[in-house]
Image (cartoon, rainbow, N blue to C red; front, side, top):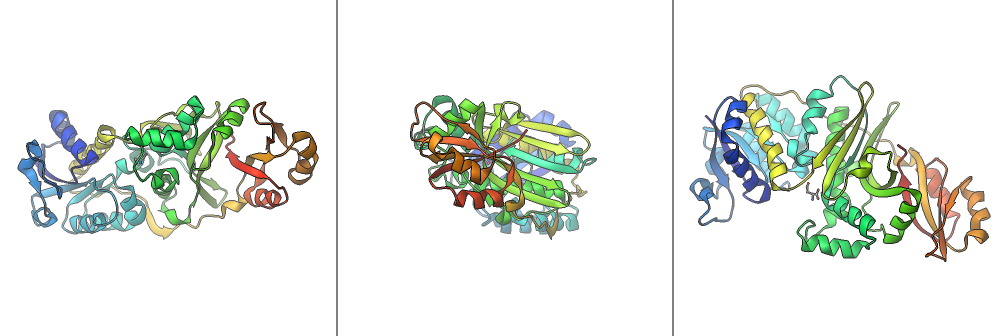
Amino acid sequence: MINVAVLGYGTVGSGVVEVLNTNKESIAKRAGDEINIKYVLDLRDFPGDPVEKVLVHDFDTIINDDEVDIVVEAMGGTNPAYKFAKASLERGKSYCTSNKELVAKYGPELLELAKSKGKNFLFEASVGGGIPIIRPLNQSLTADEIMEITGILNGTTNYILTKMSKEGLDFDTVLKEAQDLGYAEKNPEADVEGYDACRKIAILSSLAYGEHVDYEDIYTEGITKITDADFKYAMKLGYTIKLFGKSKRVDDKFYAMVAPFMINSDNPLYSVNGVLNGILVKGNVIGDVMFYGAGAGKLPTASAVVADVVDAAKHIKTNIMTIWSSKKLVLDDIKNSRKQFFVRVEGDKAARLEEIKNVFGDVTVISLEELKDEFGFITPVMSEAEYEAASLEVSGIKTRIRIESV
Ligand code: HSE
């Protein structure tokens, strides 16, 4: 029998208990042994819940019990998760977590510690919720050099952008609705400012390129400035707008960023709508591979955590090699990365076009009947630095959104 302790009985933790109970027999077959929930740690009490029988309030009970083989953490944040992860691994217990803050910040150190103990630090649920993406990067796509990862990695913002696109609503109205429905947090900053997606693309990029991508080095722009008018232009152009976490290898340079992008319907991520996530991985041998599914939610996330528990049980005495060195990957300045930009500018098209062309070159112009005092244009391919310099020469720029070429 393999004994498991679950830290945190919130949405994901209770989902883990539910999945382990619901699929007890098939999980035991796949793990090669029965998985027993010996403890659940939470500060709260749950009167009447069957979990009461195994509920503890003190982590010491778990860490001092040599019968606990695997610790599952679903608390979030780095404090006390980092302390719990380190202590668990040091005491020879494998650690499975859905905690992206912990993984993005301490991933290489905890992987190294797990390796030194012949145990495992597993984190499939930290990116893409229930979508298998960590294990594919670590174990399935190992014949390839990963050239590029582009992901819709945050369900909350994808829900908001999808609603804005389909119903023509403005950002604040949709955010409020998403909060009322419980999709968005009361404090939505981590989602709408792109910080959540930033940590997730840092984790994926570290695994793909083998060296530590520090999330603090990643240029991050959220969706708070996207308006319903931007979607009107996008629609006329046959585009939609998605928040991407992206990283890319160009020759020997690496770029990473989080930002809203305009994409057209040829892009496989175009149809990833609502709270769903999608991740497009480009390998130099395999080409494009797309991962799609529920990026959040109780049972999908719990499914990924329990799959890690099964893997940890199957490798109870062996470390699963994961290449994520603590050596920092130096990212190139995104100012050198090249793309087209969609720009909205104040004024009359006929009066300003020549001025715009003199600065930006051969632009494609677009205007909307209902917006008389402004128009939009698409720049030629240029570097971020060239765009920045050009934009300083043009007055009345209202918005600029990057365009993803397919
Ligand atoms: N807040 C995250 C999201 C939860 O909206 O995708 C899953 O990491």
